[in-house]
Image (cartoon, rainbow, N blue to C red; front, side, top):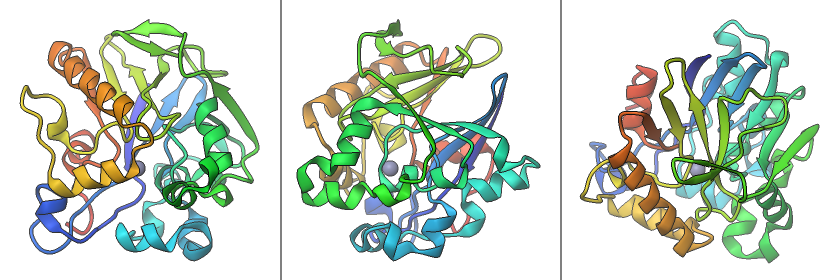
Length: 283
Ligand SMILES: [Zn+2]
């Protein structure tokens, strides 16, 4: 399986280093780390960032609150569909999309791939459709207009699957090879999940989505997160206890099995640059 790491959306919120821990100047930098996987079941997109329709109709598709707060850059060249074409593939051949959750910065590209089945936890789909009773953040974060036209969904339970390094995992994603696992990681949203992929040779990469936001939140005995990202995560959390517990488990996994499992999250620039071998535009 060949894995392409794609940044499908750059955000430059105010705050610089206080927000992201590393940017010089007044603005911070976050990516939307997605992956295109060349699998035995065809092309699989993991998370979708912002899509063509977000670029064309930002105020219909996205909330002004998050457009402003995150200073979303909306670059057509960063959409997954543009990058799939640039890699020499036909977007019609993307048959599967696995999304960690349905937040606006992960679901925006879904409708650019009309032939794809969308795989997500049932809980996430349910909460996103209901927008959880209309609370402020829920109404702004979940944008049903981003996925209403999606053709086919495959929904999965949050628990009761196989064990994977101590986590519950769904191994049999419909139509996907057994090397791609959905690993529920509730907290950021109720139905949030990570995606683990077994590489040739037996090691794993584990995309943790928004279970954490800064590389120094895992991988070391000492937890570190800059204040901006700490505040953003608190604002966005659906279940604080679950989020903290899952972050703790990820930190333990990174310390105990760092050789076998490479963990990364959706929005950290350093992790993206290391895995993609590409510098992030605009930095
Ligand atoms: Zn996100």
